[in-house]
Image (cartoon, rainbow, N blue to C red; front, side, top):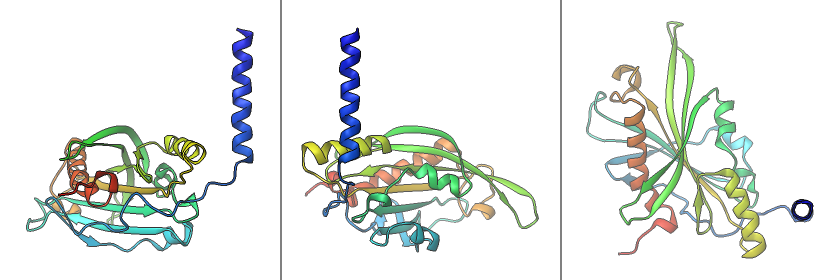
Length: 237
């Protein structure tokens, strides 16, 4: 028992020394994604969205940010779906990629659930993503308060791999820089959509969806969207 404890202490010490004296990880040159979101993804059509000024100020200047609002075209407000997709690609400074929970909290959202889900692509490949249930109160023009709910789904993409866990991303970065001599240029795709079953079509501009229907809609969009920009999911004709 004493021997095993001693070995564990030695291993922990070696790990701490490695982390302390290793150089700060730098972003690689080649990203695992294309630096663009497609115009069309399945039954959705995308329109460009500008990145937030505050977002630009907080992230390193060489960060690439791409945004699109995706909607189902040719439908009235009571029938259409809307989702917002963002693709963040780190530059040389890896601080561009971080736990989205921090940003959501700063925007006033409360995280009510966190679930890892699997998205099966048409090719048969399986993409693991993290689904965050979020909510916040919003003050309406008549001074009443409305509880907004949404789902925020994200994952991290390295040179040739992906993960729904920020901790695993950091471990993969350390492992591959030491054992494979690979510095991942991480990207961080996300898709967000509101839950609208407590809103009228006039308030939301969308059809009414509960939590399960909203998650299903987001995952359906990701199923069509991800293979168009994530290189490991792309298939050649």
